[in-house]
Length: 539
Image (spheres, rainbow, N blue to C red):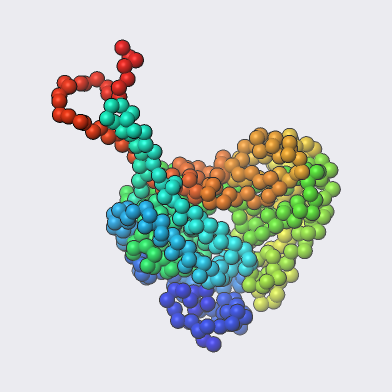
């Protein structure tokens, strides 16, 4: 069967012959004897695909094979201006649409995401390398935010106090900001865009989104299925790298920037955007710790640690990358190594694989270098994943298996740096108090967890720990969207956190109105003193 592009691109206006699941996999993952067809990624502006006239392109490299499967443009100044003007024009009308109608569009968008869930997850596996179930989870966790925005009318309600003074009422209004920009990371190609897109749009804004140049396919599908859900221009996609980011930070029509990614870029965007008067939220790097007490449920705890440390190949800002074993729980470390060593490494289209490739060759080399640093700095390498067994047709990919260090200390680079790979660092302490002190001294505050059967220990932990999100017998405490994602310390900087009530607040401006309605037209004289709204206790 012939097809011009891979099956995961079939939502992009390309005619693709239907295939079986096995044949689809063959289309998505090119064998050594099958040369992939390189496509050119386009912008999505005003409800249509727009080719860039750029002379600068990024190679989109398939992590499973390291073959180039697409070229992503660095938008030109003209491309960006076209997109921003489209977004601004659309905003002028979209902000007038009643909130009840905006909410109803989220039901339509949700249905389209569900209908295209397989296509989106296949794109994630192809471009990022995530294993199938994790790629689907990427979409589903984002879908939950879309679903929550259907209740946004309640969150967007203002407040009112009637008759604060004679004939004067005071009330607040949550108003949209204007054109909002999103800058997305490579590691969640669907979930993070789905944090940003519906939250901004349901609040009455237009959204200009930049997906990662490493894996824009999921956002391409989201853009195409948004056609007919919102008016053209309400959701635009601009491809590119640093130039696009700088343009978002500098352009006067951009009112807010939402970012998820590394600490260096997040702080850069926050500083540059804030200097130009933009509202910015940056969710950034992390070093998440799991504290294991001796009274924890051993098997459930070790299962949780293994999944949280090595799932998504460790490429999660909520990956549990440090395990703090307290007291006698240290006897469990060999069992943890045994569980981790059983995780199969390979391409994400293999249903038996638990650890897929990392996103790029550069990332792989960085991970290997940090592992070497850990050995040189004196940590004990209990499990070395640097030479996994891979099928011959995928040996050119970016593979590394589960890796575990023991006897690490806070001074070591493997402890201090976010490795962003399947590497777990084990630290040993004697007491819960030592563990809490260790976590609180770490600069990051995205998430942490405690494993225990003691309510008193869990309560002490949650009350004394200085981290934004805490799991109790739960390794990855990402809140459901009716709460908000509340990373803290060096893991977050900005006005408000992501999604939920905090997210809606980020994408809206509070206006307060004082309304005075006279019952007559009788002069009471000109008063130049500060209005006191009926107070007389100054006399």
